[in-house]
Image (cartoon, rainbow, N blue to C red; front, side):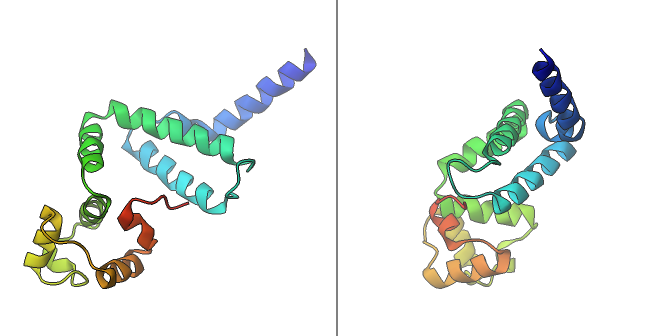
Length: 148
C-alpha cells in the first residue's frame, strides 16, 4: 500500500510540472508541447527501450488529442496529409515563416514556386538541399521520411 502512495505522490509531482504539456487547452500550451516534444526527440535514444519513450508517447497523445479538437487545425492536417510530402512541407514552411513564392529563390522564380506548389513541377535535388540548409531540416523530410 505504501508503494501505491509513493507512486501517486510521484505522479502528482510530475503533473504539477507537466500539466500544460499533457493537458493542452489552448494554442499556447499546444506550441509549448510541440517545442518540448521536439527537444525530447532530439535528446532521446533512438531505441525501443529509450527511457524517454513513455514521455514521448504521452506528449504525442496530448498533441494529437488537441489537434483533433481544433477544427481549423484538423482541416489543415487533413489537407496536408493528402498532399505529397514535399508540397505539404513547402506550404507549411511558407505559412510558418510567412513567405511568398518570391521569398524562395532556392526553387527559382515566383512562377516556378507556383508550379511546384500546384504539383506541375518537382523540387530538384539542389532546391531540396538548399531549402534543407536554410530551414535546418533533413532532406528526407521532403520525401515524407520521419525526422527521428
